[in-house]
Length: 152
Image (cartoon, rainbow, N blue to C red):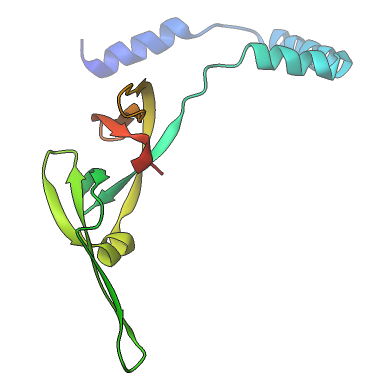
């Protein structure tokens, strides 16, 4: 069997046959019950039976690499010129998920990074530093451990 045939077979097994009149009776009964029901009780039921919410965070991506962290500024020179203009020489070291790192001008990084969404799988608290780490799953399917200071 091909994959398409197997999928179609699974869909057919999940189908339930019901006459239109029976379906209409069921829908009318549901409408009747919901219109007569206590709204507070319905809200309580919905709250008790809702699924688990997943936490989603945003990671920074720079030049198609996921940024796990950055070090404090390597260079931080800000000067005012005699003509009244400001000049800045600020750079940071970016640490990527692939294990590489790169020194980048702060202004360029802040201008060109993008965000990607990731789902939080678990959290870990480092007892020594007190830092909170998340294990996250990116949309690419990668699982990363990242310090919460470098999220969103």
